[in-house]
Length: 523
Image 1 (spheres, one colour):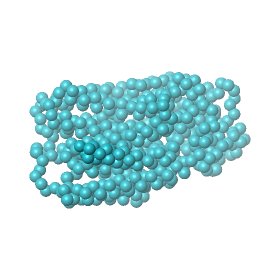
Image 2: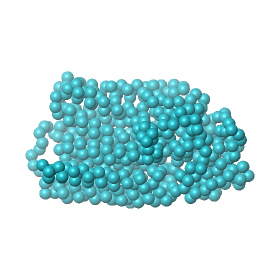
Image 3: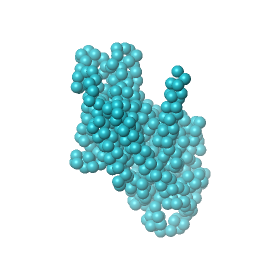
Image 4: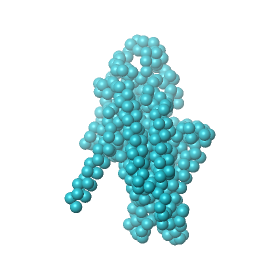
């Protein structure tokens, strides 16, 4: 017994060490290269310091804690009572990445696959959705994987009231995580149930557990998405939803798979990771165990592989962009995570070889990701020092002329970095995710600066006009070079009464406050 316990303890320590190594990139830089992450962190800051008079959040925002997609904000806001909020945010992201490995392991066990297949699933966590900062997706991946494993286990035994409540709870939890993945989860559970070929009564009982979550999600979409009533959907979001959908040819979708699965490096690194993943697949297929098939018919035995196939088809059929939201790009990593847990079981004498190939993929992906984060730390340095000297509760205009990083050249990782002022000091910036329906904080009536957003937004710093747009701001945070400064301020900033502090590629201009009532009125 002592040997088993010591072995289990060693395995646990190794698992913790591997988890710590896997999330190490997040902790080597104070600002992760994730596009939407600063906005999500700013919403958490609003929840945490809503009543702080120095930060002045209450003047501008009202809370909407019942809105969907609120789990990340609530978790970070709660942790921020005992931790610095930037630490709390990275901790939640870290746990979501590690949870993918744990959930994939549970799915491997349910499918009768080797535990090593959880490693390729873990390697897929630094994906396109990660670098876009889709923190809700990062929470949804392990919830969906673990939820499917739970459902498959519940269907293996008598389906009691407790079973129904457990499955229903997972579905309802998706309301707080991501509505798109609520639909994916419902479809996945439905397919797993159908593959067992149960009677209609049993199938109806199983699927009825999905009704509470689907009802909550569909009600939210009907109210906030389909009806789009004035006062619920802002003018900014209505304009965003009027954009035509973007669909790519299937061949182009296939070419984009390396960047979707392993991050938009725009070079050979994502292709090497894909090659290592394919090597795992080839070895698993080539050395599959020719022993007797598991019990059940073909549909049941292939339920997880066919589920991955359906998810792959859904990726190919979905638009890339609809209503201003990325869609297909979120599905591809989830489809791959399910697929790797459904690979054939290798022969006993070849399992170690397949496991080493999976480990090689994880090591390479971690190495190239860590190098990119270290480069980004140097590249983004200086912002903390500039923001530390600002006054709280003011208005800051972001002018991100330089939005991309050398490590991820096609990704606008600096787009929402002005939101870090709200995270650190409160106040407000030009654009906030409070403009969107599915957020935990929204603008009070009349507080949205849509008149400015209609002329100039975070994507178009070149449209900033000092005379038309500058009056509401105390600070101006610019990323770029001297010609960008000249373009923004039309010459010498000192002539406009601006003082300057600079660090690296960051420029922080400050205007003298006109009096105790600063910031200036909204309109």
